[in-house]
Image (tube, rainbow, N blue to C red; front, side, top):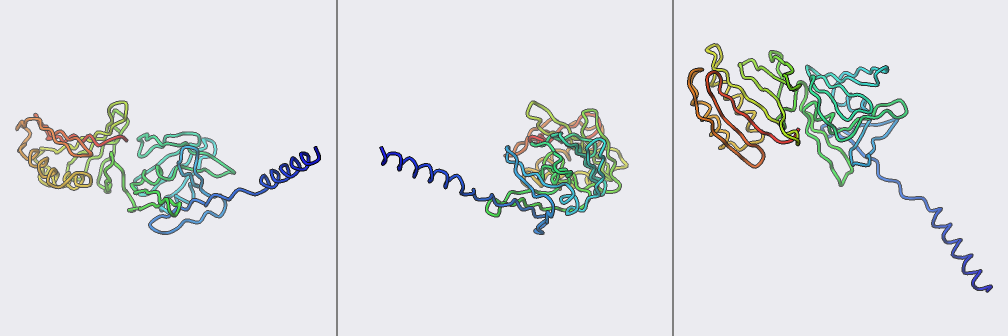
Length: 274
């Protein structure tokens, strides 16, 4: 009996000892913008239950050169860089870019008086490329600079002369100086992005220059030989009265349709989920 009691006492003491050993602290998440590590003097970034990294919005905005305006009444922040405006509200898993609502995989939250935002989605809203470095436990942001918009997976420089409008589906329509029109939509339950690249046949616009501009955009995600085929078929439409047969193209990432009836030539790019 005495031996049993002694064994129970030893086991209890060992259990208490194990309980008192502190768990190893998780390594802090680091954030880099163009290889420059951000400092977080007040509150550190964290990963939520879904694996999204959230960080103080002021630090992200400052590192990316954005102006920040806080609306305490609405619990919302507006970030502006060049012509790109991004709006984020606390508790909301959507953000708005140039009037276009885009889904995030986590909601912005306010903790200890600071708004934390999903780093990837905010950085990508300004056209940056974001990657997770698992070895360093770091988010790496490759930021190209001002006036960049991510259009269905393509990165587009917005120029001062470009005309920006919101179309009937709530997405963005960009009219370039050359006359080229980029119209953003989405289809299907998977919110698949569709970009209509509209080549104007107006005599005041140079159709060849528009095709070159469209080609530069397409080559970001589509192989050069296929882009040449696409543009070659679009070039068969010589003026507004020429009609070209609808033709389909496809690569690993995108499905493309080129068509042209009365009016412009149109290249539809089904570019993947928004």
